[in-house]
Image 1 (cartoon, rainbow, N blue to C red):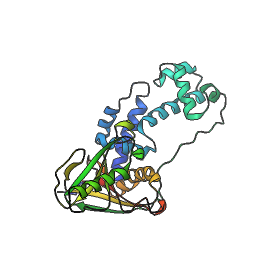
Image 2: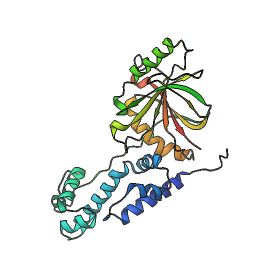
Image 3: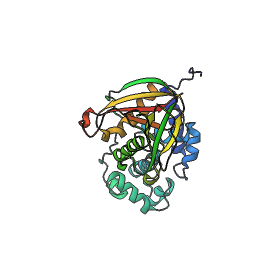
Image 4: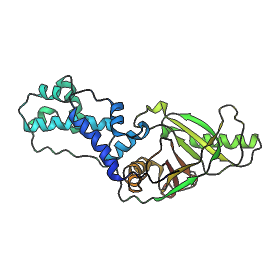
Length: 286
């Protein structure tokens, strides 16, 4: 396989800029996320993740914010009636502009027009100080048994599911697999509704296994991954991912493959302090 194909931070930024320019030119029209993904040249799976990493917020929120900020500029620097401003940036009525404007700024368009000193802050999500061990790893093909869960990633019963895989190994008198659970996350929570999110809780096995009931078997193909080792509480994983997509992957000049990311848990949350938990994060790259 040829690895000369590098994607630099500049190239990512260029693609992100093309999307942002398009949004700015079409604020008054319906903006379709599928056509934005095409303009970006990112695969649909990574489009939302990369955009969020570079923009600091999900693309949908970014579009609404961009519309709202244009409204704010027009309110501040023009005498256009609020209704005209609403239509100009794609809102069918002044009241829908009002609602969104209040959500973002906690103040109505009218109050904003009359209060020129009001300052708008933006949230930052990337943690430039985040220290992660990182490497490119060629991972061999692996046999895994797994149970697929549907629902919010944070609400899944990982412990109970892992115990069921254990139970199955005992019942079937199978050789013991890898003690570090391997979870594959198939969907992006920014895009897919929580109840539809798919997670495979996997145990890597030394042998092939016959599936039984809801316990599946599959072979994961060999592949190249950017592997990040994060030490700390699971509750900060979202910002860890944002930082990986927005900072580390472009710095490492990697192109992402359109495949699911995965996590491997190196110690047991039941008897480990949250700040000492070790998580390996696998991002498929070319």
